[in-house]
Image 1 (cartoon, rainbow, N blue to C red):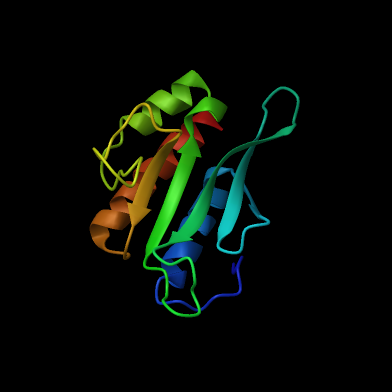
Image 2 (cartoon, helix red, strand yellow):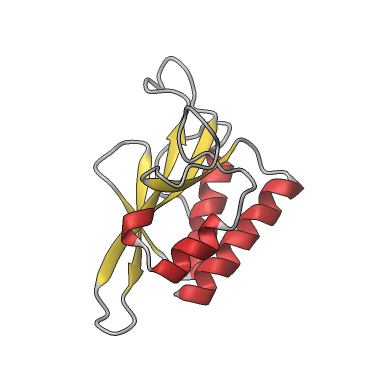
Length: 137
């Protein structure tokens, strides 16, 4: 499923992560930002949608001059249940919670996973994240 109208070299990776997010039970919506889709989960009791994160192209603010080369799959700590937050924080591969400083930063707003290509290692971590999401959704 193509969510954004781009054909960057990393678009297949973006779409793979978006499809895996939906497979895990997340709702994926285009946002008002050009290179981002928002991630929502349904509350098990009320059925209400609750935003928990996003998938975003990174590496270029002006994609007409330079293509983005990173996909950021992030989950906002303050919007997650404690159990989901703890299980996502336990995954350390491909983590980059802030662009500067240590890759894993529990004071950062988001738990962020940054991918550059779709290798076996990337797929393994993506599947690990999907398993955590399925467990909690």
